[in-house]
Structures are given as C-alpha cells and as structure tokens.
Image 1 (cartoon, one colour):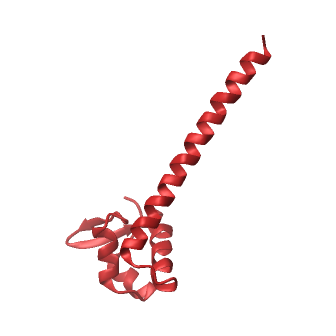
Image 2 (cartoon, rainbow, N blue to C red):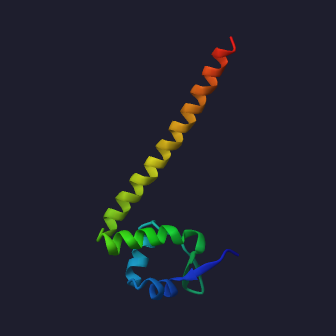
Image 3 (cartoon, rainbow, N blue to C red):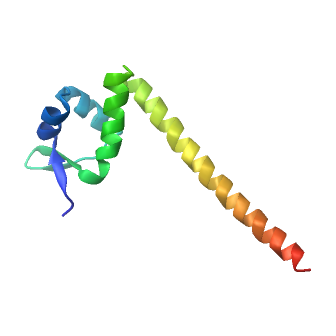
Length: 100
C-alpha cells in the first residue's frame, strides 16, 4: 500500500477549508483513495495538492481558474513531448541521409 495522508490531516497541516479539498477532488484535479468513508491523498500527489493550494490561497485563483491552468499546463506538456518525438524522428531521418 502506498503512503497516504487523510483529508482531515491535510486540512489541519495546510490550514485550508475542507470544502476546498473536496472541490479539488470533485473537479477531477486530485485523485483520492477512500477507506471507511475517509478520503486519503497519496504522498506522491502532495506536490500537485500543494501547487493548487498555493495558487488558490496565495494568488487567489478560484477553482475554475485552477482547472483552466491545470488543463493548459497539461496541454503544454503534451506539446513538449510531441515536439521531442518529432525532433528525435527528424534527427533519425537526418542521420540516415548523412550515411548515404
């Protein structure tokens, strides 16, 4: 079993509203495990949670804004990966022509 932390512990540690955590989960921005009606966040997902928490509380970005930013960042990462793939293909083609 992966290490995890309960929603209630997160609320205390980060001094946030429990509704904010639930909105992140309901909006699909966080994935949680539920056991005995207690929601847990995996430790691996803590950086994502902290980023959303900082954006919301420090920059005052609302939930729809978080969703838009998250979607744009995901699309940017997809484009970066596609660009890397294309550059690798181009390099391979270029290497083939150099051998001729």
